[in-house]
Image (cartoon, rainbow, N blue to C red):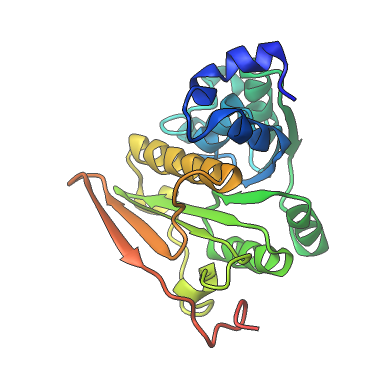
Length: 248
């Protein structure tokens, strides 16, 4: 049950008939794992924490650098050299002390990744390398945990939702083969600051939709943004019957 403080804090969400108290209670009961506390992870974690997701786990093994501050809005100049995960967790606690936030200042791999994903209600992928994305996708498929995936570079971004609980949902591997992809990072190609906020906010919205059951998540759809032209495109995604990750 929501307390009086929670009813007031989340009143603007509860007022919506489609969402109501039921949607807020589902957020309160959810355990969301956010992998990456950078350009995408900052808006994702801040919005989900403020919206009332009951338990957030933030994972990132990097420290805050000067070049991060152009787009990673969870951090300040005075925090240079501090852990991203721990700093972002502290920021969320100051915004909303009613949620539980855990910071993991490490790179999750192997059994630790599998176990942590299995404990989550939903996972948000805010990483910037294919190896982590593929490993995260495999863990989510194995545990049937929904995955909200986002990416942003230069002036382009994309978002999709992969939900292995549904027979018609593709997984990340259905879209991207594991061989032949090369990482291209923001430090190499650049990125315009508001883009990561737009993609991260979209990821947060998709996470809320999946958790609450309200609306139509981007399952089987890839949303693509060209920020310079301010054009959104949508591609339909089909499940690959030969996918080595989800077809079995």
